[in-house]
Structures are given as structure tokens and as C-alpha cells.
Image (cartoon, rainbow, N blue to C red):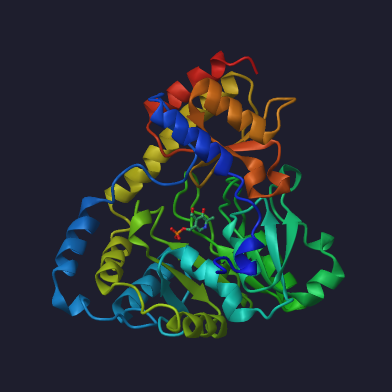
Length: 387
Ligand code: PLP
């Protein structure tokens, strides 16, 4: 019996599998592992959101199939938030689609807009879902490097003209996972102009736009005319510590949103209405102290980790947003070896940069999803290694 499609077989081997196996063995052996490997907030969802959700779950009005194109109240709340936060006006009916987390939309987008053989341009290093979903749609993945020399922004002049002719979509992701790099509105303006010239959709992943420590990052939709060629993915996951709740949305080009909605109508039956109403409560409470406190917490953690790593001579970026720290491997160590030594000699789980693409080689990523004391301990343990 065939149990695996060629599509699934074509996915590259899971590069974190080996480290995952070793981590599990270490935990089973009772070693004091500190996990700074994954970007999953360690703090609970703020109580005002949980309490609202409890009420909504108990309300029979939320118990039937949800509408495919999302709950009208949630869509309106997103539109209001978008205007307040970015000064961008969106039609809640046609320019916003609620999603089961941004990954839901990111991963289904190629199936909705690409034909087999079309090219998807994917950042390297980048969130692995972009490449996997282009492959699932039988598209061709063309990776473009994002490097420290260019602030981890793409070099639009460096694309191959033949690839551009066949390209249907380019994935951008700012604030960026794994490098924590940001993008300015001026950069987004250049990207929009380039996309118009080449008739390519920009799928900008803004899952981390609200985890910031300096000025709030811009939306690509702030660029006049961006809606002609761009959609932007947003999420409640990181902003409100709601990763398990699975709520996000996509905003922007109405034709792309209609295609994605048509595809998803054949795959799911919308998001549990209680979750959409709870997400609306979260967005309405965006300016509450609890949410500002989350940012302050990540900022303090960032400072502890940066101070410790820099003090031992490691080269690290300075994240203005996201909860990631991108660390250059000490001379002579590749990212897998460095991550492996961190795990086996210091009981610290970090992710090797090469897992995000070949240009991630030479770096490891740590997430600020453990408390300050543990981050301090991470630094002390690394200091003891002979690197
Ligand atoms: N985009 C990026 C860059 C991510 O790192 C993640 C999750 O880690 C997501 C999107 C998906 O987030 P969610 O589906 O929870 O909104």
C-alpha cells in the first residue's frame, strides 16, 4: 500500500530531527535542559482574553459551523485595528480573511494561486513552510539569499530574469525569522515597485510585527498601491501568547484573498467562532498594559542574552523586533556542530541556522521564550565551553 505521496517524499529531510532526537534522550535521562530552540511563548494568554473565550465557548451561538470567509465582527475588528495601527484602510469583507493561524494561509497560498511549474521565490534563510508549500503546489522553489551584508534584505537586482518570468509569488518576512532583521517602509516601497514591474505577488509574513522593542514595524500595505500586488499575513500567536489558539488573518489584495478563501472552502469549515470573538477581544485590548508588559518582558530577556553572549565574544545581531537572537558560530564550527555541542556539553537547545536554508549556515538561533534567569544560566553554561 502506498502511504506517502511523491509530494511528501520530495520534501527535504527534516534538519532538526537529529537535534530533536538528542534533546528527547537528554530530557529522558533527566538532564537539566534549557530549551531556547522554538519560538513558542512560555507565558500564558492574558486573562482578559481567556475569560472572554470561556464565555464565548459557553454561548451556543458559536457552536455551529463558522462562516468560510470569517466572522463579520472579527473582520471589522481587524479592519479597525489595521487603521489604528498602520493608518491603512481595508474593506473587511474583501480585503481581510481570518485564518487558523498565519501558517494556515501561508501554506495554502501557493495551492490557491500557482500552477505546476510556476516559480515561488523563497528567502534563504527562511521559515521552512514557504518552500514546503510551494513544493506541495508542484511549484519550483527558487531561494534568494538574505545576508548580513545587506541587512538580511533581498537584492532585487540579483534575481535571474528567467526565474522572474515564471515567478508567481515572493515571500518576504519582516520582522524576520530567524535573523530578527527588520524592514523599513522605504524598503517595502521598493519591493512593491519591483513586484509591479514583474507582475509577482508579494506574500509578506508579519507574524512578528507586534513583538517589537523600538519603533513599531511598518506594514507593507502602508505603501500606496501595495494592495495591487501584496498580501500580508498576521497572527495573534506571538502578540498575545496565543500560539495554541490558531487565529490569524491575511489582508490585502482582494483577488488573492478570494482565491485563498475559495481553496479553503474546500478544505475546512472556518475557525471556531468563539476563537474569532476571543481574537477580536485580544485585538480590541491591544493597548492594554498586559500586552505592553509582554513586550517589555521580551526586551529584558533580549538584553540579558545579548549582554551575556557579547561578553564572551560571540557575534550577535541586535533585534529590534521578534523574540529571536541570531548568533554567529565561533570560528571553525558549522551550525550543526555548534548546536550539537550546545546540547551535549551545555544542555542548551538552540536551532542550527542551516535548518532555515544554506545561507543560514554559520549561525544558530535562540528564542527568548524562557525567563531571564534561565537565559543567564544559558550564558554561564556556554561560557564554560571551550569554543
Ligand atoms: N511565520 C513565521 C515567520 C513564523 O515563525 C511562524 C511560527 O513560528 C508563523 C508564521 C506561523 O505562526 P501562526 O500560524 O501561529 O500564526
